[in-house]
Length: 91
Image (tube, rainbow, N blue to C red; front, side, top):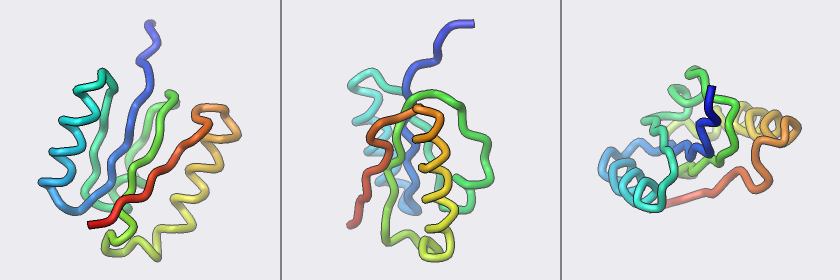
């Protein structure tokens, strides 16, 4: 099986932002997976591939999901899947 390469996970409740970021990220040759909520992101199985998380910090429900997102990032860091795994966005 071939290496799937890095993946960028985009979590934003605004569809137009997800679409714009998807277009931008794909334009530089990276894979992207998008999620409309922190809950959707956290309950979906994500590949164990190198990558990062782009997260809207004003996402509804983010405060409740913050500990789970932090745990996900720590796990990926321990697995050496990414050295700079997160970027926060806001409108």
